[in-house]
Image 1: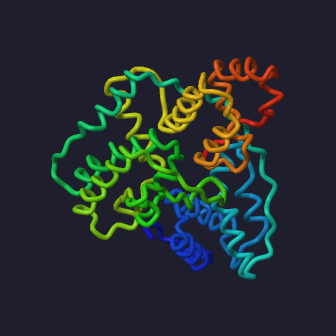
Image 2: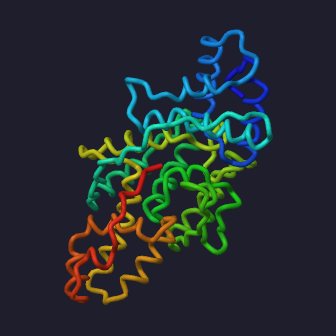
Image 3: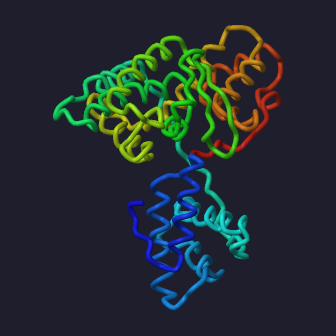
Length: 321
């Protein structure tokens, strides 16, 4: 591990980290937050020899400078660490009271064809010098990674954590095992995306012949910061509007829904297929995307004679990863 844990917690934290890595659930931001937590315990409880409820409660308390969501992001790994210890009979600490997650007011960017063309052109013209493995790998990975988001609608974390064995290059199916929550689902690839992934697999194998992750980084898989930084930098090469990589998922949904307009009255089956493909645990979670395509709700009302809300029930906006 890059971090050096030195307190009485070090053996337990290192065992937990090893377990999470072996389970494919490790994120390197976890390491940073665990290190900060250990320092917190060492500074406030220098004589402590065991983990206590007071330590957990004091760390998980929402700070004046935090939003509810940032507090939850900071403490997620600590709650997971507690569950790990309790499952092995090594702690009786209770889960602390945390603030409720706040609904996000983010409205996804409506991509234009020109903007997308500009963005993917920037992806395709990354430099290959200096000819170091990390530079060459970025040139190979980035155009394919973002095209996969665009063409499949999978979440950014699902793409980042794809293992080599999760991508069936024969049948053209992704097995999404590391998703939001514990659900597993499958995504069928468009034939053009499948062809691109096959070409990519050959090229990336020359740089990382023993990779475990389909999109490998020197540390295993890329962190979310890598996705955000690369998208933002390449988006701004030719575009001036604001957009995020996660917006490609919304674009996938709305483009699919747009294609249903005028295609008949089979929207219920289409909704089910889209919901399953996008990894929603309940059908109603897909409903949000209808609000982005007003023409479809008008078509439903015209064909059915019923109000849109009577057919597709109200649900909360889907939380981001």
